[in-house]
Image 1 (cartoon, rainbow over the protein chains, first blue to last red):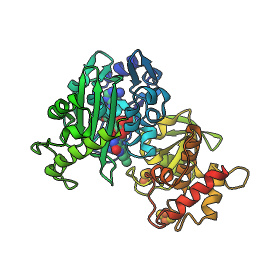
Image 2: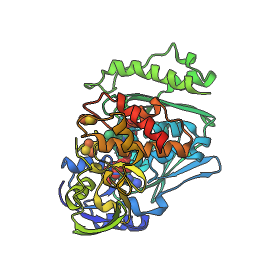
Image 3: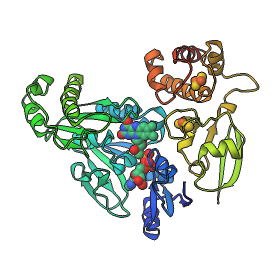
Image 4: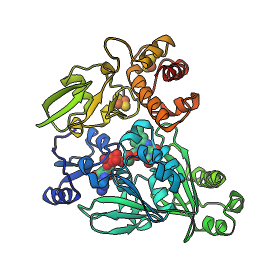
Length: 264
Length: 157
Ligand SMILES: Cc1cc2nc3c(=O)[nH]c(=O)nc-3n(C[C@H](O)[C@H](O)[C@H](O)COP(=O)(O)OP(=O)(O)OC[C@H]3O[C@@H](n4cnc5c(N)ncnc54)[C@H](O)[C@@H]3O)c2cc1C
Ligand code: FES
Ligand code: FES
């Protein structure tokens, strides 16, 4: 690891100011992606700004029909939280299959979506539920937030403060794990929402995406049978040592059907 | 250099350290607590697991400076007054180890798992233990006796 200066601000305003004062600084959340990156010397920030001391980034609360989760809330907290389990159980299930116990005890919502790893689980839930990302300066629709491979709509020095998830009528998440890394080889989040059916796929492409054909078929019959006759086009999907694009395309339907079968 | 103060195994410690120092290095090299092992150093194996404010974390994937003011427990701090913790005793009783390299991390993870299960009213069965220990790799035992030990330890805790 290269040397860096360390800061632990107590408020979002102080963190924003520190980022402005140190143009080569980077934010540290749960560190489950960022610390390995530093250890491999793949990043050389002048300063590290630890968000761990900011109380306003923590906490899970219901605001009417929305569930608002702070950026520094850990996966393990989402998995176990009673409010999450009663409002959006599919979100608690999704958090419970991220990495392993220790990764879930440190990794955060804000860190996961800001990193936008193509194989991460949270992007599936954010797009699948039609959630809104809240930052220190604006609100961004989930779909506009994830812009490409490890790319987001965040501007220089912008900090994710929370995500607001609307409560769906019904939802489920299913994932086909890479057995070694535990990341999603394919993850599918299905949701019946006030605005219609949404199907979001993570792990399969360079960035999370929706499947309009599946959504259309499911809007008349929200069950696994409804997509039986559909196939997913493999073009543009990821191909690597773990799976070919064709295999991932096949898995999308299999995993989507498993997700639909979980809906009670 | 940055000054950090934390409670480690019940005792307050203060050190001036470089911000880039990992928690695993801090425990092993600054405090001489070598029961926390470093197997992979890449967040995979779980040999380095310790408790921070009651949660199990991989100390190779954390900076010591993040834990200023926190309470850390390592394998050395698990037993009280010279007796083994019930989970340590269960690993010994059920032969839940061979070379022992993964064992300290296994035990620290297991204690957290059992505590969380009891808080949440979850039954501690083989399935729960195997899923919960996904972040801990053992190269020797084949896991069978580890699972047995954790279930026995849970009953004794
Ligand atoms: C062994 C292992 C297995 C894993 N398996 C999975 C898995 O199965 N599924 C999965 O989804 N993930 C997995 N992860 C990743 C894990 O979920 C991380 O928690 C996540 O990728 C990053 O979150 P973090 O809080 O650790 O962020 P950090 O690593 O601290 O930060 C990640 C990046 O986001 C930036 N950032 C952090 N917070 C903010 C913010 N509030 N605003 C703006 N930028 C911010 C940081 O500057 C950094 O660039 C795994 C990790 C490990 C080590
Ligand atoms: S040494 Fe920390 S996980 Fe392997
Ligand atoms: S006992 Fe040898 S690695 Fe587990």
